[in-house]
Length: 263
Ligand SMILES: Nc1ncnc2c1ncn2[C@@H]1O[C@H](COP(=O)(O)OP(=O)(O)OP(=O)(O)O)[C@@H](O)[C@H]1O
Image (cartoon, rainbow, N blue to C red):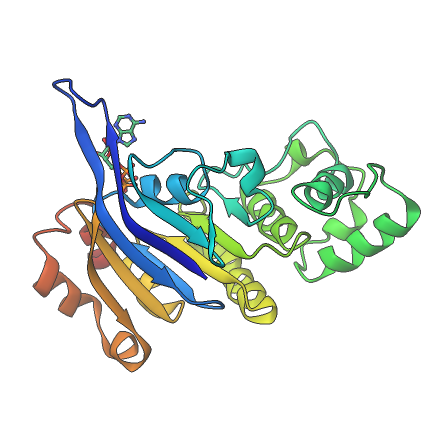
């Protein structure tokens, strides 16, 4: 479904600050796979998502989605293929627009030519139905500006909005990191449900090793812009945080290790 073929990305080429964030990265993800991604600060996780999303262009290598070469496809056009939820809850939704308007915008984004903007009665009814699954009472607040919502409510809404276009690929960029533990657990529960019900091919970057091991069906670890560890199935299920730490502690020297120890 997704194939990164020997992808390299450099920043500040030819200067003192030259940095190869991705170094011949190889990754093939099957349709419906839920891959969690760990790695220390600077390992290349965000750069990888940015390359897939078309935010950055790779210097070397190719990106394929469903066999189509999207290496040079711009970010706005990638909306037809994927949806992304960021760490910052304010990034996925427009604060000055209402819940219904945000959902309408999400529905019209990317594909589906011919759909017209407008919060019609039919749409309101459908949005209310969709929002009910969150059990946050947002179905009764369709006219409320999104800026009034809490971080967790906003992140849940952003996540739910991604399913309005049924993306071929869902990118989660530390999407629970800014939330308190209870809210993070709820958003994770919603994530699992959405991914499972819609069989979404999903990549989830996290600094929390427990989260990476207990969710999804495959886990990869990036180190210096390459895949250092790739486990799935029973191998992943049986793997424990101490095992990963003892084997790869050196490459996980910072935050990831910290969250692994404290969770
Ligand atoms: N826009 C940029 N300009 C210059 N260097 C960058 C840029 N983006 C990333 N880098 C560098 O590329 C490397 C990989 O960064 P990246 O953000 O992909 O790592 P990460 O694994 O997501 O780290 P973190 O967990 O800290 O978010 C780092 O050394 C980083 O400093």
